[in-house]
Length: 107
Length: 114
Image 1 (tube, each protein chain N blue to C red):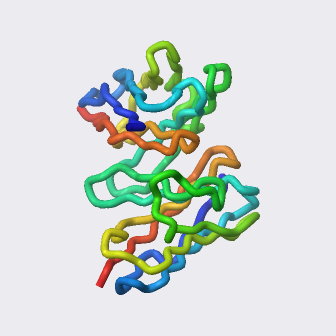
Image 2: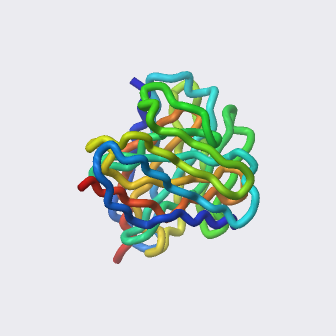
């Protein structure tokens, strides 16, 4: 099983800051990494698929990058509405797996 | 609006069965793989099973293999998860999701308890 380790687990940030969340895979997932955002009492929402592919309706401040085993979700100019838990997800290895989540708190 | 809506969860005794349904709308359902994912109380997200576009490929988490069957009916825009021999450790909120369609349902709760 491919283990995805996110860092940090928690981050308290101020609006307009740039935020970087990393996801490290225990073995290569090629480009099969996706990023989901989950707000309290809501279902996850897909932000980025296949490392860096944008999703219709998702603000352009969300960007994905990386390759192989190391991936990054960058949120440029954070907004208050970005308070949520973020998960990376790999669909290359069997079984598919998810990171443990990174909770962003807005100060 | 692109949407997945799960149903069929409930309280069931150990050893019992349930069939979960996931109804899709707002996108061309037959063009996408669909995953079932669960979250047990206090635990992280766990992939359970998935099925390809025409239902010819199906994959399962080892702990549910032989007890669960995933299927789909593209004419009804629906995917199903039949769950047998349920155990306490299957207690979770079950979601259907699709990366390709960029959507995740709201979940249905399965509780296995006597």
